[in-house]
Length: 387
Ligand SMILES: [Fe+2]
Image (cartoon, rainbow, N blue to C red; front, side, top):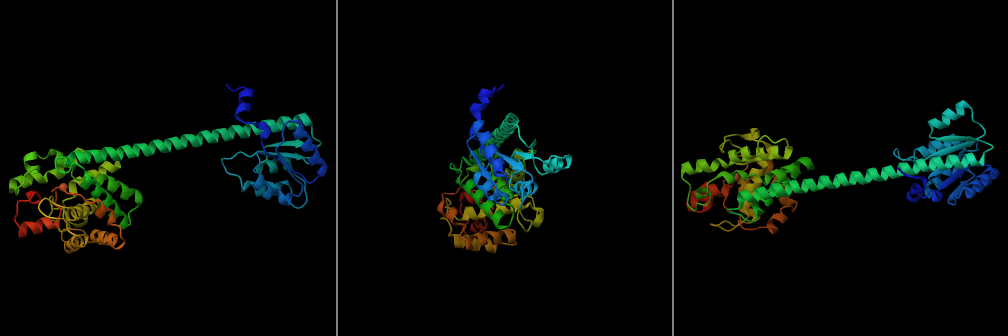
C-alpha cells in the first residue's frame, strides 16, 4: 500500500497548478496567502471572470477555486464554459467558495462540475485539507489514465506484432509450397501485393484488401501435395497428369479449411478458385460471380505476374504487352471489372513496384493466357505447358 510519503514522491502536490477565480481582491489575497502557507507556489488569480477561460487554457490548472457570485459571468457560467473544454476522462476538480450555499446553489454547482464547497468566511485548515484531497484525487486519476494509456499502447503493440507474425508465417508457408521452383517466394509475395492493389482499385475497404493480399500469398499452397515428378517435369503433362496437377486447388483448400480466422477463410477460397475462368471453363467450371471475388482477383494478379516475369522458355513480356493480353482475355478468362481495375493501376503508375522487383518466375502459369497461346503456337516442352 502506498504511504503518503511515497505518493508525494509520485506526484508533487505542491507544484500543482491552482487557479483562483474571484472578483473580490481581498478574497483573492487571502486565498493566495493560504496557498502559500500550505506550500503551494504555482497559482494564478483571475478577478474578472470574463478572462477565466483564456487564463484556464493557457495555464492548464489542476484545481480551480471558484467564487459563485461575480459580475459579468457568475461561477455557474464559468463552469459551463470550462466543462466544454475539459476531457470526459479528465478529472478537473472545482472547489466552490461562496457565501451563498443554499441547497439549490449546491445542486446547481454540482450538476455543472463542482467537486466540493466551502462557505465564506473560509477556515484555513479546512481549505487546505479540501485542496489536498482534491489534488490527490486528481493525481490518482492522472496516474490511472497514464497507466491505462500505457496498457493500451502495449496491447496495440502486441496486436501489431501478432499481425506481423501471422503475415510472416503465412508468407513462409507460401514459400515452402513454392520452394521447389521459386526459392525466393518472390512470386507469391508479388501476387499478394498486386491482389491488394487490385482490391483497393476496385474500391474495397482497406482492411479487406489487406486480408486479400495476405491470403493471396497462399494461392498455390496446395502444390505441397503435388508429386515432384509432375511439379518438376520439363515436358508437357499428359491429360492424366494434368488432372493430378489441378488438384493443387482442392489440396490447398483442404489445408486451409475450417479455420476460424477470416484471413484463412479468404485464403481457402482463393486456393480453391484461383484457376476458375469467368466464362466457366476453369478447373471447377464455376462461372461469373459464382467465383468468389477474391479468387477472381488473384486469377488476374497471378496471370499478370506470370507474364511480366522471365520464364524458363521465354523472356518476360513488357507491362504493356501483358496488359494487352489481359485485356484480350477480359470477359472470357477474366472478370472484366478486375481487368479494368488492373488497367487503372497502370494509368495511375501503381504497377511500378512490381516491375522494379521483377525476378525469375517459376512455371506455374495455368492462369496465364500466354500459356494457352504458347501451347497453340510453340508446342514446346516448357514447364508452363505441364498444366
Ligand atoms: Fe495455381
